[in-house]
Image 1 (cartoon, rainbow, N blue to C red):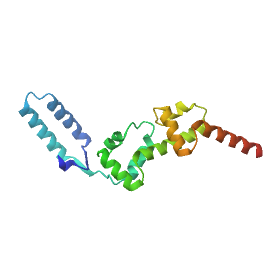
Image 2 (image 1 turned 30 degrees about the horizontal axis):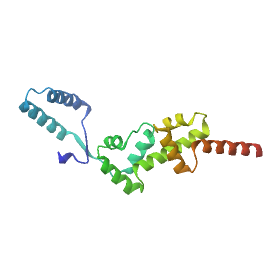
Image 3 (image 1 turned 120 degrees about the vertical axis):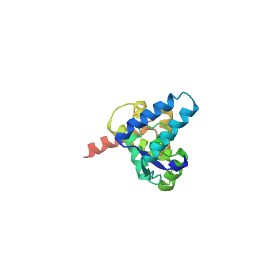
Image 4 (image 1 turned 60 degrees about the horizontal axis):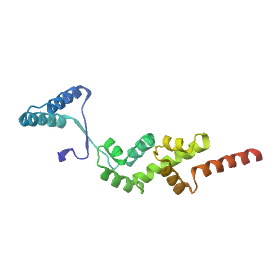
Length: 170
């Protein structure tokens, strides 16, 4: 199976039914011989698929995915699965290209969006944390304070005060 490392196999639309049938036959195989035969057939079909090199070096594709899905990403494994690479390879490639970890980038992007929400809406901090993909408000506040230098509430108050002063002066 090493021949599939760093490859994304894409069956054409017309071949997907064949894969479904083979997977169903593997699942319901009566004995080891039938299982092995069906697995062999599946591997032959996989070998006929269009092979595309997974560009693990393409940090830009990973960044684009993170930017588009930051609120729903649960963990690094989810990102790695999307690109058909191991999470260890993902982390290595990402750090080489971006000079920061995947988690640091994800949190940085989430905090940028949190700042936008804090400036533009009156949702409470817990709601904003959830909108930005943080499932723990305390963790969100800690990451926010580490990156921005103040709590989300203080950031919002400072922005509102700054806007008010600008409007009064203008």
